[in-house]
Amino acid sequence: MKRKIYEKLVDWKNSSNGKTAILIDGARRVGKSYIVKKFAKENYKSFILIDFNKVTQEIKDLFEYSLNDLDSLFLYLSNYFNVQLYNRESLIIFDEVQLYPKARSAIKYLVEDGRYDYIETGSLMSIKNNVKNILIPSEEEHIEMFPMDFEEFLWALDNNSLMDLIRKFYIEKKPLGQAMHRKTMDYFRQYMIVRWNASSC
Image 1 (cartoon, rainbow, N blue to C red):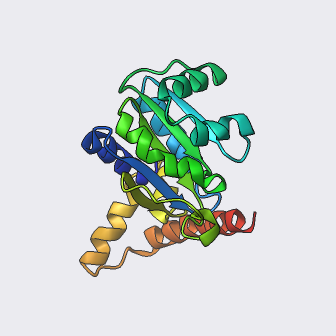
Image 2: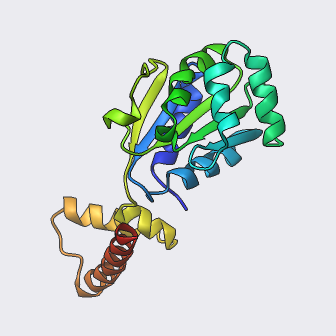
């Protein structure tokens, strides 16, 4: 599934050179985890996804007590998740990082180390409890992810040109014509049903 935020991730990877992490903030069920895993598979030799909604306390403790021994921290993660890490070719993902703010605070030291890239995903990142007792790392870029828009919905249905037609006729202030208008409205009704079902889950 194609999402517009994917290109922002590519731009970040190409421009940051490992000097910043990126935080994707967005509501639940907008596809943050999906797009980050897709990006990781297509742009890195390996990746580790740490889901702070599921991970054990021993993994959480690494980001509080092992920051002075990053060699051991990375070795532990590599063996725990059974993933080989490669210098400048691996990505570590902190999923649902708002559930363990100390891991977010650790980004400063992990980025300074420079071995790997880091993406964080989370919801309600500005809520007081989600930043309690931590310093927000300056090495963190912040982007927001929104629910799928109409153009992305069309892409998911393998329609890559309808939105271009709509834009062209809108700019030129021309009507689409009855047949194309009906087709567009059929797509839009499907889109609204999908959006409503997703938001009610």
